[in-house]
Length: 339
Image (cartoon, rainbow, N blue to C red; front, side, top):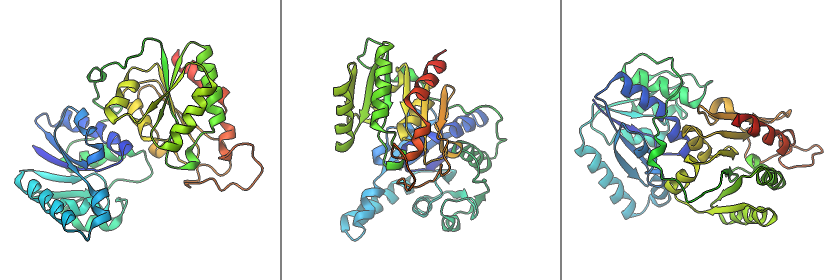
């Protein structure tokens, strides 16, 4: 059986689908998957052993130039590539109008979420067969239920298996024990205060751990370097590609993270991961793994699901809810987590 998955982004969303692929492979041993994905994330689907071919698209770039001839030529070329393939079905695992439209490029049965289950309900009109999956559960479980319905096997009751092999990621050039800080995120409401990161780095250094801070954007690099300049044993990992970052995560002694894509990768690699949540709800999108733990804020307005903190009361820190997740609380959780 040959299936095309359409799930283009983001990093966390892609990793959330891995356990569903593992379930399907156990239930249907001869199944093979191809995966249509945003080109910037094309390295990720290859990590699952059941994915045979990755088909990169550049929708984020194409949508900015829908009036250009080059964009329409690229879309036509993608359609031609998909039409050349033979699939038993195409499964839209994203539930968006853009991903649903992509299913129309494929000569196969189109399967996706129904009107009440899709993130964008209108997407459901493009499918020939529909699956019902409740929203009020973690994204990993939603994916597992979708795949089991679409492919016709009983939903396993076992814990999620991501299928990732850490041996595929060569150890990073590091001799001493180290912990990775994943402190960069697109929402300001998810950013744990820099002063807290600095205090936590001091505790790590005193316990004999080197600290590696992952940073990509210029502002985040500047923040990371300020912390590194304040503390010994702290270095900044700047602008690594996904595979390079995976090397550091796979062999770390621990990972401390806010709600960001690499936190899901660390958890899926079975690294001891502590994720801090303020404005978002870990019950629905938290990083899950055998050695993953969540620290959610204890604050009246969290999780607010807002990109910015709008708390108007008196608070020492911003976002205000993070006052309930102190460096001491994270450090104590980390030490207990290592036992």
